[in-house]
Amino acid sequence: MKPLPPKSQRSLVKLGSDISVARRKRGFRLQDMSDATGFSIGALRRLEAGHPGSSIGMLCEVMRTLGEDNRLYNLIDISDDATGLALDTKKLPKRVRSSKDKFKDGF
Image 1 (cartoon, rainbow, N blue to C red):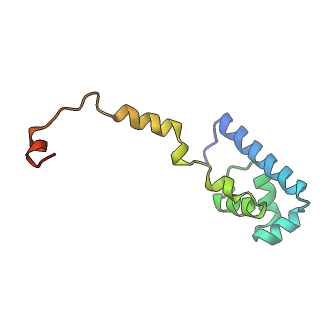
Image 2 (cartoon, rainbow, N blue to C red):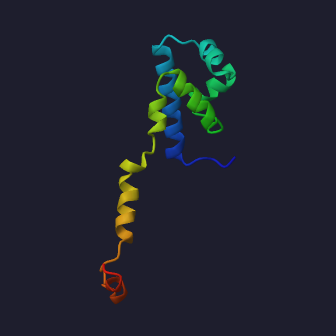
Image 3 (cartoon, one colour):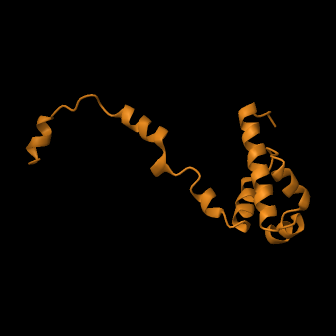
């Protein structure tokens, strides 16, 4: 596996740490999380450590178990994607020219 850029590594470590804190705040032991999700304790430890090989499916199940699956569902909400909307706006033509063919059909 190719090493991740430092910023991506920091993001995964923070995500894993946040998952660990959320689990412990809810009083879940790693064994409880393992029983609820079906993932091994070792796999859950790797997720909480920010290991880049952890699967998105595991993340989804852990978030669901923590009652936070709505956050994952809305992680990249295209209706609130400022970058995507700005890029769409940049693609708009600078000028709209009328077409004689448009008016033949009564428009």
